[in-house]
Image (tube, rainbow, N blue to C red; front, side, top):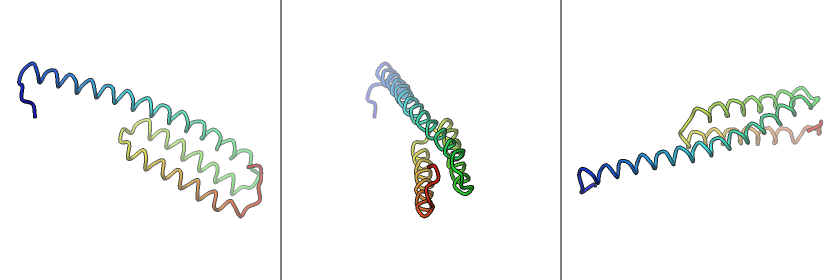
Length: 110
């Protein structure tokens, strides 16, 4: 609760605006870094999709690459960190599920 009115509240308001700018700047930097990392993963997954010979594996790698691309787009427009975290958890689950199913398939260029 502000006890000063006038000049004191202006300083507080200015500080709040400064904090928001700093937070937004850090958030943008983190999001930018996350997007760059995901872009690398997406390229790698797309390359795997092209490299494997088994059609089912090709489709699964393509699905993962597409989901990563969708996640990149989502992160670029979403500001809610918990929603981004949920999206990353889903990507992790999708890849874990793929690995578990793939373990019964002979290695084919993966």
